[in-house]
View 1 (tube, helix red, strand yellow):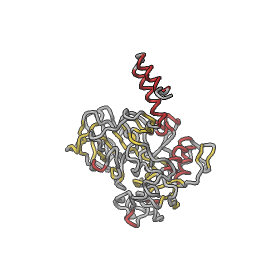
View 2 (cartoon, helix red, strand yellow):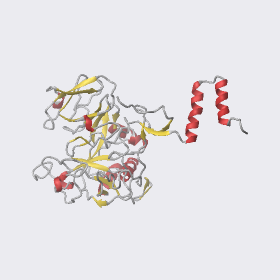
View 3 (cartoon, one colour):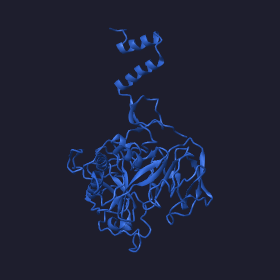
View 4 (cartoon, one colour):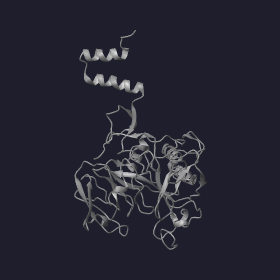
Length: 407
């Protein structure tokens, strides 16, 4: 009848009158938000960065043009680790100049040859040295979040003590904003980002990778040297890509396969589960990787310069994908023996051999369709929420999970 309050309103009034704890009232209000559809699905940009229309977040379009890539078999897979440091509130540390580059192994990259290249918030107790990295002279592109929300990229990064880090090359942080875009960066073969597309800690554990990935291939067998050797979004090719005597030589015959290419599994492949898929995928991590490559794809960002595949994964203060993978599945993410030793290895061989080029990927057609068009293999990423919550598109109360601005 007119003048009577709704049952929900009466409950709220009763709670207030009886002095029930404020937390209970907030819980009731939360229920109102969810019922009325005003709750928001939000994500933590420290875990899942960049705008929903960033090249690293846009799923493959359902009208994408697929051209078979013809990637050649490899002897092994080794991960290529991007160092990701997302600790903007810790004390600033100098990153000193070291000119060793890729010319020497061991501890050569650890030496301070000065001067300081820049200062950035880096935890003292995080160590990444020849005692912890993979291989002798790994790429080690690093991305470090600054207090202003921009990301400083550098390569090849090392941190062998508590007092300073070292590196050689740097990129302008204005080209990489945590809540915006980050196309350009410290993968020198293509000039593409050292954080966008990186397989992050926690994603294998969750069973879902909900963004574009990055891979490296052997240029001698897979990349095409014509048309400049690269394609958008890459802005360069490796030095020596036309020189048949160079380790960076591009000897592939498929003109679509230039560095920067977006690769994906065909949309018609069934990938329901390990026991129900049309590719013969045998392992749980194989299904996780295959789903990501079908729905989002991966950009080829560097030349491995020898007969291996590489997937770019996170290493940093938040942990490492290689350790997470070993803990989850009981075997190494890296595999040799011509990718035949176990189910995961066979899945890698299977997946890489079935990749296709998204031939119509471009600046206004990201993922093979008009960039803002939602007719895609997966939904666009949800809105960005508060840093440090760990949310990956969780439903949260408006006003309680707002991103920092103007830091």
